[in-house]
Image 1: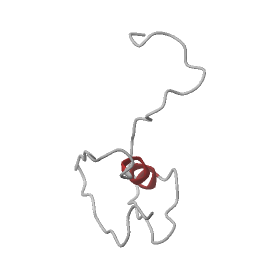
Image 2: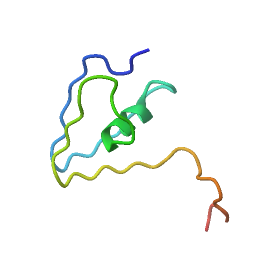
Image 3: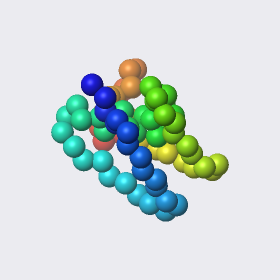
Length: 70
């Protein structure tokens, strides 16, 4: 099912965002669209030059060793 259908938004310089929603609602998909990890099925994502998008992956990368404290 479409996650964002006809959606439009803008984020201004210095804005900080928090995404809250139910499991499977599309939060991670939206972040992947914003950081360029995936391309939208339609429409476009426009980023100004010098924009930095950071996100923390949900899954622990394979091959990582050590404790949580480390």
